[in-house]
Length: 132
Image (cartoon, rainbow, N blue to C red; front, side, top):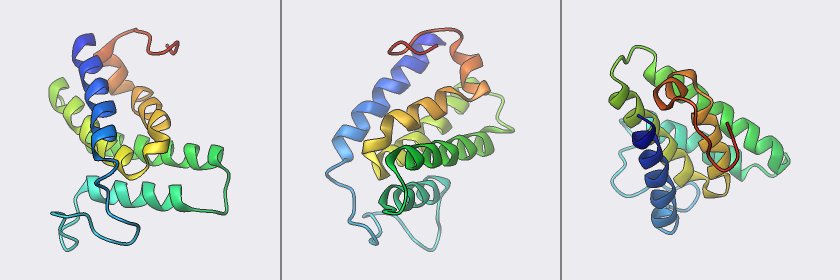
């Protein structure tokens, strides 16, 4: 289980780096995304990008708001899911969408996902960059 979560976190970091340049400019729909059928990932990405683009709040406040949005989205999407592999896949998909929308807040997004009890119970106790 620990290896699976570590792999997911590595993939998240790699995905953010590879797709940061491909992100659509603010206000435009990314290629391949249909606005008439929004997915949980696209809804979260839009919320996160709006928070990140806000000029009226500090970076610390943005990070807290983004973390809250990600936390809530992952919990909502995984509430009735029993399979640990599926929980991790959903969490990774949502975290990737959020991190692609706001790459400068990837650490806050990662921490928000790791603080979710259903994710923590899959991973067990481990340390990532000094965090328990």
